[in-house]
Amino acid sequence: MFYIGNHTSSSKGYEAMGKQMIRNGGNTFAFFTRNPRGGKAKEIDLEDVRAFLALAEEHEFGKIVAHAPYTLNACAAKPELRVFAENTMADDLKRMEMTPGNYYNFHPGSHVGQGTETGIQMIAEILNKVLWEEQHTTVLLETMAGKGSEVGATFQEIRQILDLVQLKEKMGVCLDTCHIWDGGYDIVEHLDEVLEEFDQIIGLDRLKAIHLNDSMNDRGSHKDRHAPIGEGKIGLEALSRVIRHPLLQGIPFILETPNDDEGWTREIALLREEYRK
Ligand code: FE
Ligand code: FE
Ligand code: ZN
Image (tube, rainbow, N blue to C red; front, side, top):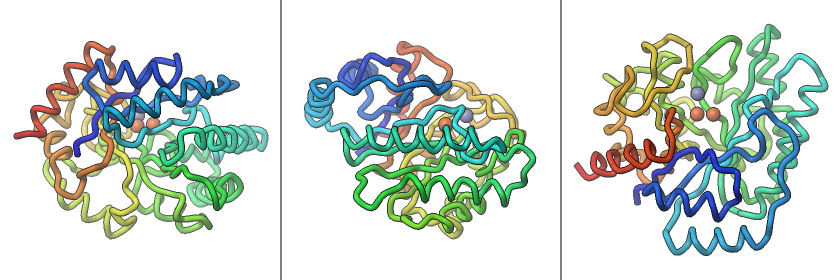
């Protein structure tokens, strides 16, 4: 099954997001659990959740990929910012139990001069506080572009975080094509080798979701500027090889391209066509 959708800008509830995605031609989506800059989350409406779950089943949706606010920094230097990260994640994970069995993706964080090793330890420390045995959500570490002091721009750093987490079975990885390209991984010329490296260092069984983005910048630029599919330095051909890759089947592909619903509708149609080639 080919699962594709976009990061929806809607905040009108689960059913509205699902319906918009069907109009866009998708069968999965991503969304911010709350205002991307943080703040209090909206109460979850049980009726809305029920309507969404029925819709998702009817339209054979893949797993949905919730995104933590991007201001959340689990390895911030200021203790109060780490407390905010912990509380936000804990609250989000509790709310995610309303739609059990899905993914919660977050940016590992920026160590802001404390060093990668300290950053990795702080991230794992928070994960060890917020994960619990009975949860039904898999938490995904996103691969980063290495902008500033971002942690998680190499497969090794992701692996080091995972190594320190106790409830490993609750953890997975979300691979962002723009980020790893900007981080230096050559998915244009050497996709097989990059996936092999991912498998050796992290394990492909941990790869649960893919953010499918083109990049405005050259490989290794550490910039993190997403481009529409086919309009960046990665290009349509290379991204088509990603969605068709035999090792990546059944994984939800999420577009985080600079677009509106009209643009995403076009991209989803284009990628569905590429997928069938
Ligand atoms: Fe992200
Ligand atoms: Fe991403
Ligand atoms: Zn990005």
